Structures are given as structure tokens and as C-alpha cells.
Amino acid sequence: MKKTMSKTAGVVLGLALAGTLGATGVAEAQAQPSIQAPAAAPAISTAGAGSSAVEAPPASVVADLKAATSRARASLLPNARVICYAAHVQDIGWQSAVCDGSVAGTTGQSRRMEALAISTSGVGGVCADAHLADIGWQGWRCGGDGTVVTVGTTGQSRRMEALGVQVGSGSVGAQAHVEGYGWLGSVSGNPVYVGTTGQSRRMEAVRIWV
View (tube, one colour):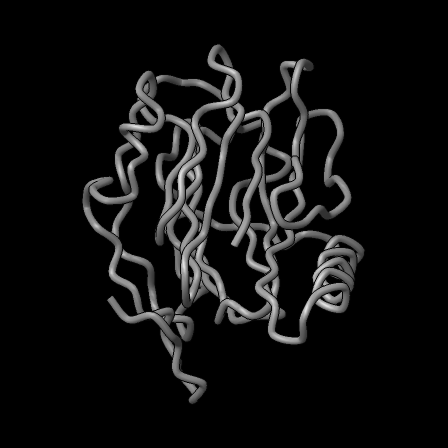
């Protein structure tokens, strides 16, 4: 699989997603749930494509994510790998951005995650896909470093059930907090999938790191 993304126009994220979980270890790390993997991630030039429309987060959320990514990068080495993300949560709306393994969403409140916005630096960009109630896998959304990629829905009271994440180079790790299970086992690889499919269980919180 290709480990870096070309910097020319029409660049692609460069990794074909497996049709099964395979080496990502999700099935082993999370013995109780099951996840059916989505189709391959698209080219960045077609990142807007998807089976379900995604409403962009408000400008304030985008600005918060970009600022958080910049702060995290500035606190580390110039070429540090950074991933920041913000969750849209039932009855709360968009939360503030968190980075590099911090928790987005809620635990102990029985609130569903409905959408997630992600920004990266130093990893060559990110693709994300959400498995949603009554929709299934929504379709991959991709963007280069410094852009904000959003998956899920807002204003539809629709739970997110699983999340797929892939970065342009190196590996990514993630962990999901799921209704009835709590925190599932963390997974790492590229891509990775967390949560469940086929069980009608809401994701309540997530952690992601690179």
C-alpha cells in the first residue's frame, strides 16, 4: 500500500481499504462487536462524493479545529504528526476540538455521537467514513493536512454506530465508547475501524491518535 500522498493536483490518499478487517486487528481487539468494513477510500479530488450528504460544521467549529491543530503542532517538533477532532453530540451539538488521543463525545450520559470533524498535520491528510443508523456506511470523505473532514449527520437525531479512519502515511489508532459495551479495545493500523455494525448500538465517544 502506498505510504505517502503525492503533493501534485488531484492527489489521492493512496491506500486501498481491505474488504475485511484483516491486519487491523479490530475483530481480535474487540471480541464482542462486529464491523463490516466499507468500500475503498476515494481520491482526494473527489472527496466530496458520498452516499449521503454531509453538512459542513459551522465556521466556528472549523476555526476551532484548525486552531487546535496549529497549537498541537507548535507544541511539538515542526514535522510532528497531529490529529484533532470534534464531535457533534445529542442535545449538546458541536463540542470543542480535542487532539491526539483525548476523548471526544461523552460517557455515562447515554448520548449518541452524531457527527465527527477531523483535521490533521504531518500525516499527509485523512479519510473518514461513518456507519449511521438507517443509512449504513455513509461514504468516505477525504482531505489533505490542514483541511477539515466531516462525517455523520446533524439535525437528524441519527446515531453514529462505527467509524473508519485512514491517514496518508504511517498508522492511526482509535478507540470507541459504545452503548452497552463501554470502551472497546483500542486498535491501530491504516485504516482502522471502531464501533459496531448490525447491532443498532450508538457510539458515545471516540479517541484517535497518529
